[in-house]
Length: 113
Image 1 (cartoon, rainbow, N blue to C red):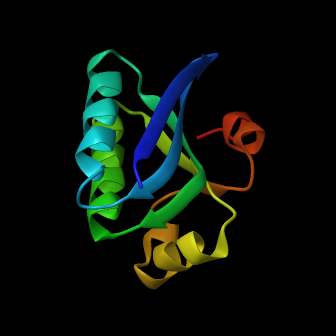
Image 2: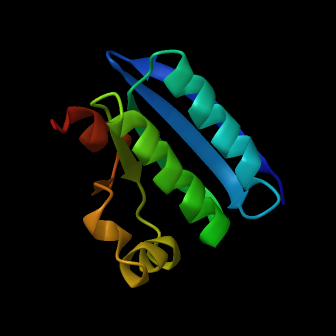
């Protein structure tokens, strides 16, 4: 399966909608997108993972790398995910303490830092 990416701006935030599988083969595409956004001055990102079917450790590494990039600019990276199998990965790795995880994009957009 491939990875689909789309971005849109909502006020001062950028929503990155991700679909498919984030694995060792597709993660570089997501990494490149996040780097491009931060390089372009987008420091408040919402990553919508509702259509993600699979996430591995490479994908987690890309998300952590994205978080480090935005934090270097006083930014934020919020995740939108309600799928139990994906949330379980964040719980097992302890990353629920690192990433704010929201049930909807609207909830993530409304959240303040």
